[in-house]
Image (cartoon, rainbow, N blue to C red; front, side):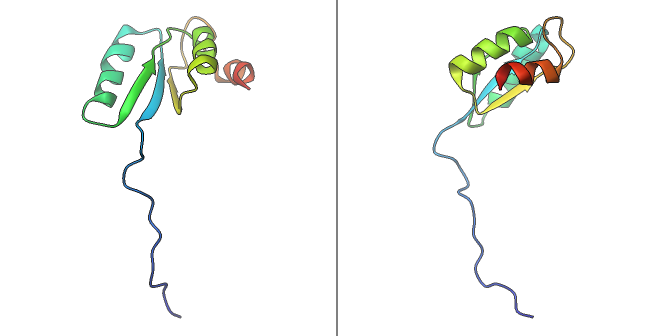
Length: 87
């Protein structure tokens, strides 16, 4: 059995930075972890809501590529209700 001689590859860098929304009620997370994500990378943190309710509003407003969210927040913290709000 012969192996393919060509390999398809994705571009090593996308033309634009990944747009990330970081959601958590912890100041440490919002400032620390998201700053580390941005450092030396092509990630752009476009918003840092402090709870799930704000995340719904900011997601609709900013259209991020990725939402990184804590699941133990005081306001709208469960994934199920949040997803139902977003969809």
